[in-house]
Amino acid sequence: ILVVNGGSSSYKLALYKHVNGALNTPQKPIWNTNCELKTKDTHHPNTKMVLQKLLHDAIDSGAITALSDIDIVGHRVVH
Image (cartoon, rainbow, N blue to C red; front, side, top):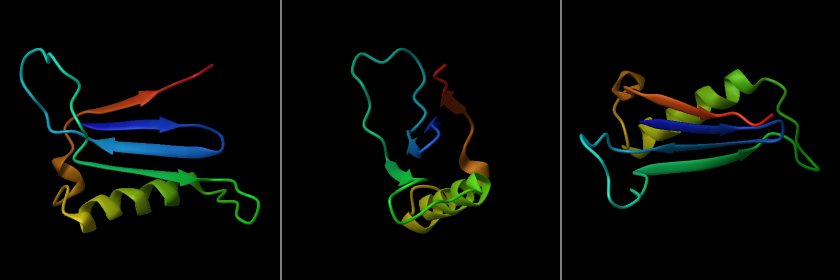
């Protein structure tokens, strides 16, 4: 399960192992990362490229072997 918390200035991504049934306790992610899109010294206008790099980092870390390993995606949206 890929959980994305994207905003105007940062993205936070986490991967969780899919577990059938109800969970009694919160699960720890098998991988997570944060990326500041805008800092004092850096601005990343192409968020698609940033997200692609972050997801490939998940592959490089061994958390997943391919993007096709992700079965479910959740995105937090704030208005």
